Image 1 (cartoon, rainbow, N blue to C red):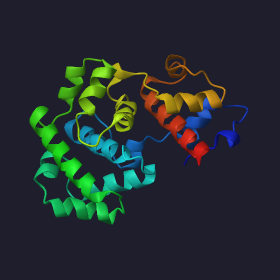
Image 2 (cartoon, rainbow, N blue to C red):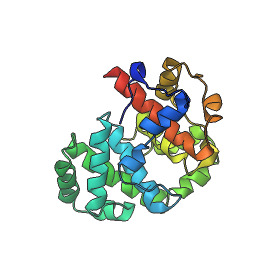
Image 3 (spheres, one colour):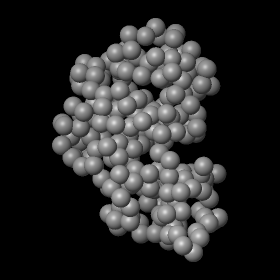
Length: 214
């Protein structure tokens, strides 16, 4: 549930960050049914989610489409690559996703890239980036239909299990932090939470910012 900046309720016993985490601190991966771990399948599913959200669709639509794709058996690069195009398209149709033709092609081409370049395991991408967030973004944007927005989403979420990329709070999250009277500084914000909660804080701030724009 998103939190409106102007109506953030902060009990006397809680800080603004505590309230953010309680009210809006669900990651987008969790919303999509992804139990994020440093393992091939959940990492690939996060990549799929990032491609879907890169289209700037509503988060609920992207997470729903990701769930449908995984439930339909396309939760690994091999399964996605080898699937009948019509089957992937139909899964997106059931999720009422937009741009189904382009997205179907992008997902299958991206699965082929992951299978061929990274042997189906995005931990190879992690190793190649070696803690350099710009290098990681570069590898991510080689994936079809995964632009800067989607790359930022992936990094923002994956920092929960790839700690060398912490703290990652993008401009949208930092803008929301400033609007709430919090430091517009990723390092200072990250100091206020446990390491594996940085991704939850980033998601909460993004949800707050999105709600404020609506």
